[in-house]
Length: 124
Ligand code: HEM
Image (cartoon, rainbow, N blue to C red; front, top):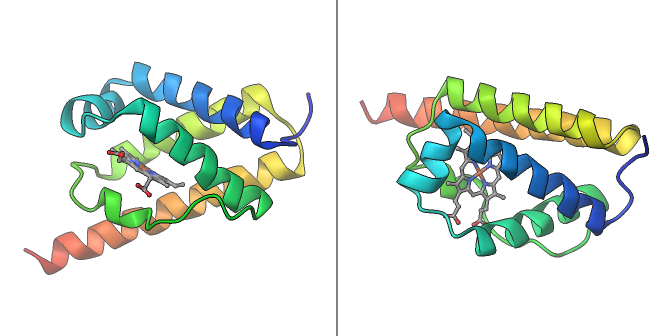
């Protein structure tokens, strides 16, 4: 197995990750039923997001956290999301970049989760 080398590799990673998301009942509900995500818009956004994070390309502009504030997501959603992300990466790529990307995903998921938990406590 080889490492992630290009934006094309990122597309492979993102496409197969969201295939798994769509087969996961808990997550598919949020993306497809609750948010009614337009995949033709979301997937290219995610190629850009990861291309910016991994290769420092200025493709993604936005505020990723803001899109998650009103979603019905809690700890178990993040656990599923991260498990699928890691599993997907391990199936496809191997190397320093793949490792760093899993780490990055874990850290962002942790930040999202604790920000959401904090906000929910504030609003109670
Ligand atoms: C419980 C886990 C998660 C769920 C259910 C979830 C769901 C969603 C949904 C429904 C959207 C909005 C799509 C749309 O309507 O356009 C979105 C956007 C996005 N998500 Fe997540 N997400 C999760 C975790 C994460 C994590 C951990 C990351 C980063 C590593 C992430 C990165 C993004 C980005 C970059 C966007 C696009 C924001 C923009 O519009 O600029 N998500 N997510």
